[in-house]
Length: 141
Image: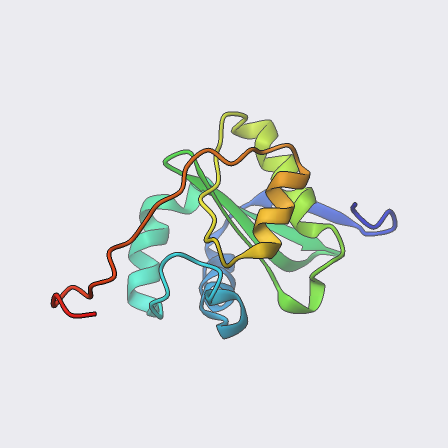
């Protein structure tokens, strides 16, 4: 549930928010929930945003950025600043993004319980499970 007295809005991404997205995406406490665990450099992020900036939206609370949501290849990407967890901001962003991209899906790590609860609580259903080989790229466990 979204806290009723929060002044939230979802706006289109602009260049001034690119670094906010990168810093939030690289936050150690949030990064564990993402499929790609690598640190994203400024250069990598600039190239990525050049290509995908229009697919991302920024959530503002009282005109300050507190999260982002995007849809790439029909997959929802979402993050909320740690200090704003459990206020319904993720639910707000998913609700808003579904108005723009109603057929979107979400790939969620099995260890990311918070995201599983978010999407399941919004009516998403589990459809696939992906299994990884126990071997590293070098071929050793």
